[in-house]
Length: 403
Image 1 (tube, helix red, strand yellow):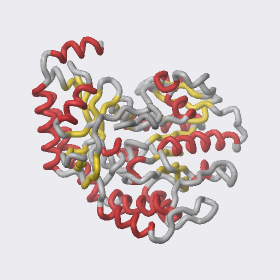
Image 2 (cartoon, one colour):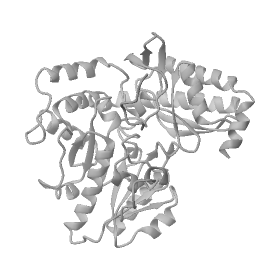
Image 3 (cartoon, one colour):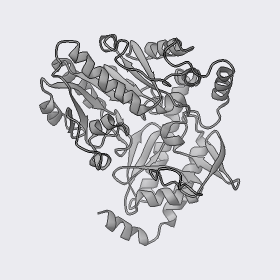
Image 4 (tube, one colour):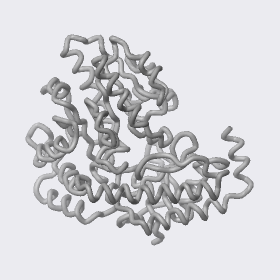
């Protein structure tokens, strides 16, 4: 395929999909693939789910877009539903996770400025974090790989080691505005933050007047078996939370959720978006929440996650040289690969008809639709098993190159 007219920012395989249904994608040759990456944790209910298609078609016949100059049909209702189900009192709708993070960062600094502490601008993030590709979000994450070539670092962003509470505590000062953390690091290698760690951070924020921001762009929207990952604890609620990806089920939709204490300062003129939360997006988002808001649906996610984790652990037992450690939480799960590069495993799996992803620390990432069936999990793991069995002696050379 000729991609010469596009920015060279992506390097997709020579593969074109024509349509999808549920957990399956079909390419131009008619071959079907099991989709266990879901557009990077986006396709909550898989491809072409009838409820989402119906919601989109119905709204498309009425209003597509007004901009936020006017009251957007469905926005207030969807915001109220999320506020009822979470810590939040207010919601700002966006198009993406990165925009949700931008709103969260601005809201945190604005909160302190309006509370007579304009010097509190520092945001403490964590090593291994990923918060998006905008200038502020890459600075908040601090990954040198994503900062290289884009000029000087922005002031006010520092990073702590993930999981090291003492170091985090030492970094909090009278200049700290907020602590920003993913309850489960996705791009950073499928690393869940222990619930006790999140609870300790919540207590630290309360003691110091620091705001707590969660990035649940990837681990939210039911992916861990709760509506949001931090809800596994009842003592770790944030002040601000960024969400996106799965909340739109494949349609661009994000949210910045916040308490009234924070949101009240984001008055007209302080922030805005043209497309964020337009009529089409919130219609689809409401249809997604019809599923995510049901406890029986979330229980199904937990059940299938337990099954997938069990099967991955069996792969580890059978192939300890290739599957070093099973990682993740819920249906954001995978494993740290041993004597083979994760990219090679991904490519071999794709050739065998299974679409998976990768993450940092040589990690293989699986994020199937939340309504994936047990039979499809069996098929996916069978493919992974065949791929692992096919790995030859060349894998040792690859592993040596990684070290």
